[in-house]
Image: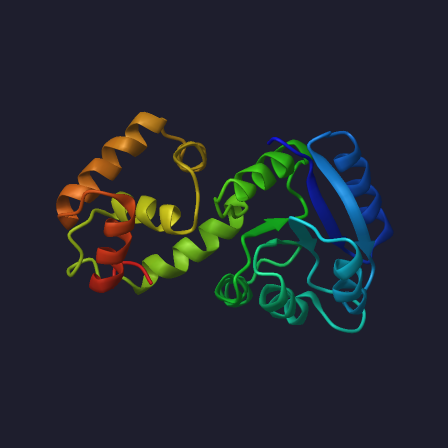
Length: 212
């Protein structure tokens, strides 16, 4: 990244505030612009300290993070919004993704992986913590009728992970297979769906009800 990424943290727990403050201080490509303990501080602070990336906790005193996100998204559509939470319930995850969050990461994510995932988000990816991705994937797979899908269970699994914004390397690590095996599955997916790229494959799969 050519310039430091300006970050705003929205988090009320001191121990997490300190963790993130120390972490970003160790990486010159990130610059902490503001630390907000309550959601009500965020919009006024953004007027004074614009940012590229916002890390948002969900459970905050007063207005919660889920209520804050659409307000920020409407006024500052360029900001990458990343939920950083302990909550893994599937309904909330899907709801927040629909509100336009760019990533959903759990607080037990290691510091090294957290930095890596934030960089992926800034490059246009939409990472989810592996457990979060698995939770959504399991729910989606339960809704698919295998008799109507031309894809195998593993191919459906991989396509869902792609739809969730996971990279080929992340998929390979999560499924404990090689990146080359992931590419072979993706080539088979393209062939079975009569498509030639990721966007076409995802659109076709949604038309068929393979993914939502």
